[in-house]
Length: 256
Image: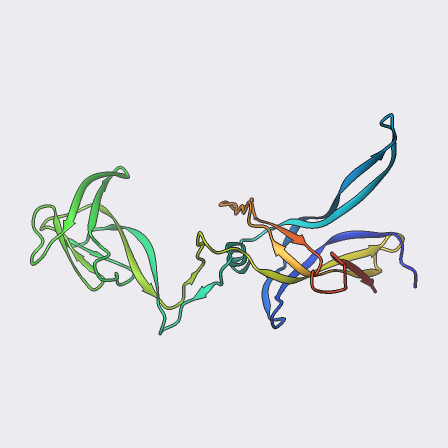
């Protein structure tokens, strides 16, 4: 079967596997605006009056860019050059949070138990602005101080209104991505699965796979949109396997 012209509908999924053991590192299933680009450097050969005889090319590169419609924690960790940390009961993650709470009988009841020494201040709010700062005290809560016991904060007698409390708690369910200044992305095997359709028969679907055995996430610019519409952008460079006789930057395989 000789396949010629097809309609490229979308990227169905993008998979990055660790080169050491082929284990899954990243899987994206909501890629939009995918673009595959190759480029090379040209050196013009000219005659004695400067007319071009031919152009010689080298240094070919391949680049895949796109945006995952959803934030992907595994992609973020890979872009940061680190592994995602998943909390357990034996390995808790200190997690910042805040609450705005109305005082009831001079007390504030938190949703979570604060980590030790993480509640140093409590702020009274008036019209959503800070009106008064209370400092952690000892013994009984007196003027402009408060005390903490488990999830309960005791305010000075007669306190009313809304209060802003920021603190840390120990989580057994949190995930953590660390972007360290001395860590950079590694090398992966990339498989990009693309849905295609026959140009003359929409119902006839083909699958295309872009295969690269040396794919490197580009960390020079990592942009994660902090709103619902921006998405999670990525750039992946395809390089040849230097220690292999195979000179492929990538291959495209198409089948029914």
